[in-house]
Image (tube, rainbow, N blue to C red; front, top):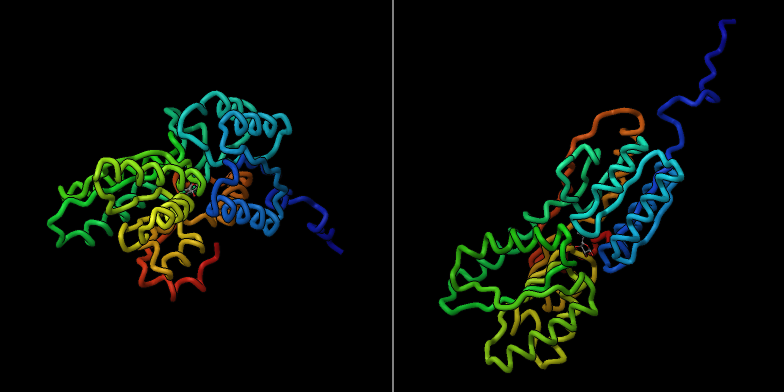
Amino acid sequence: AAAETNTSTAQKDGDKKITMGFAQVGAESGWRTANTKSIQEAAKEAGVELKFSDAQQKQENQIKAIRSYIAQKVDVIAFSPVVESGWETVLKEAKDAGIPVILTDRAVDVKDTSLYVSFIGSDFVEEGRKAGKWLVDKAKDTKEPMNIVELQGTTGSAPAIDRKQGFEEVIKENANLKIVKSQTGDFTRTKGKEVMEAFLKSSKSENKPIHVVYAHNDDMALGAIQAIEEFGLKPGKDILIISVDGIKDAFVAMKDGKINVVVECNPLLGPQLMQAAKDVVAGKSLPKRIVTKEGVFPQETAEKELPNRKY
Ligand code: GZL
């Protein structure tokens, strides 16, 4: 009989077990927890061997993790850069070692974009614009100034820089809309609450009311809600709350009338990342930029949408 082409034992290139080194930002927020879960589950599903590290939001820890993946000669490295700058050296080391790098979630600011194969993540400027558009529509009939306080994400991170840019670009349409205070809450509930407490205290001493909170993520918005309630005001009523991410807790808060609108930022990037890794190891070319799809959820949609939320 003709020689059997027994492919079950032959390792076809496409079936080679891929080893991926993933350097995660940390575990700072509900969004991040869901992002990690998506990556770990998708790796299992795709048969990718995943080496995973949590950098506790420190760039030097992410760089150390990437260096260890290079030393272990993984097939592909992926990470979500905690801040935009300071990556050239370690990305060059990965390139010199012939290991492709895929960016997920956040971008890096490098001149030489050959240092990474693709960036899979949201358009944060557009998320900021969506937040701004909701407020411009909400404020279209008010004649009074509306004082906005902004809880920024991690200083120097792509989402913090871009969400600020997109929001400011749109609210310029209405001179009544002014950001009167802006400070980082580092994407965490604790810091979001602390900064909001300080904003409320100074608004009282300066006798300058706060009308709107623009939080770069739900965790800081939820911290701010605690501070506003402890201050004796009603979040969502006395002070409008605009947030980004769309974690379940934010939908519950919207259902309770405490958040007015959430701009979705999809953390479930795992499946797209694993497919990209397989393609790059199989020698296929990838688009430089893969944008995740996401929507906007005003308070009135919360009850209906809540059961559909996956994170
Ligand atoms: C956005 C992501 C941000 C989330 C925060 O893609 O990088 O980091 O908005 C998370 O919740 O901490």
